[in-house]
Image 1 (cartoon, helix red, strand yellow):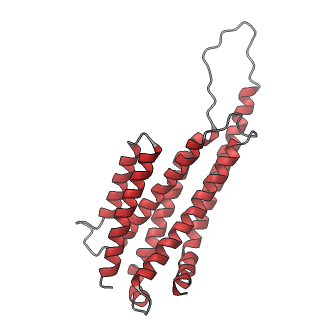
Image 2 (cartoon, one colour):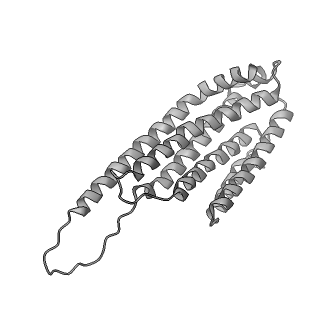
Image 3 (cartoon, helix red, strand yellow):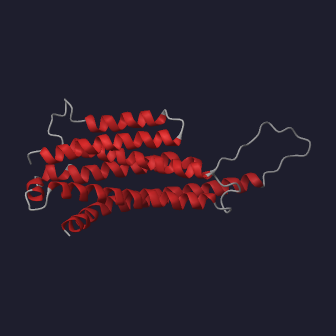
Length: 229
C-alpha cells in the first residue's frame, strides 16, 4: 500500500513534464504530417510542358522519416526533466531527510520513482509514437505503409530517453564534486547513445540500451541506499 501511495505522489509530480512532452510531440508531429500531405498533393498535380525536358526527378519521402529526431528530442528532454525533478529538486530544497527518514524502506521509495518515470515516458512518448506511426501509415497520408521494423525502431529511440533519465538521476544522487566524477552518469548515457548509433541491427540496439540501463540503474540503487541524506 505504501508503494502505491508513493507511486501516486511521484506521478503527480511527473504529470506537468509528461503533459508538456506529450503536447509538444503531438503538436509538432501533427504539423509535420499535415505539411507532408500538402506537399504530396502539390507534387501529385504537378504538370510539365509537353515535349519539354525534365531537369531531374523527385522522390517522395515517407512522413515518418522526419519523426526520428523529434521523438529522440522529446524522449531525451522528458528523461532529463524527470531525472532533475525526482533527484535534483529534493537536494536543492533540502527535503531528502523528510522523504527517506520514515518507516518506508529506501528500496520502496526508489522503486516508486523509477516506476513513475517509466509510466510517464511510456504514456507521453511511447503511446504517442504508436498513434503518430499509425496515422502516418494510413492511406490518407501515404500510399505505401512502412514495415514493422520502423515501428520497433521508434521504440528503440524512446529507450534513449530512459538512459538519459537514469544518467540525470545518478548525477543528482552523487555527492562528488562537479569537476570530478559527478557527471559520470550523463557521460555514460551519452557514450551509450554514440554506441547505439553504430549498431546495424535492432537487436544489438536494444541490447545496448538494456546494458546501459542495467548499469545506470544499479549505480543509482547503490548510491541511493548508501547515501547519507
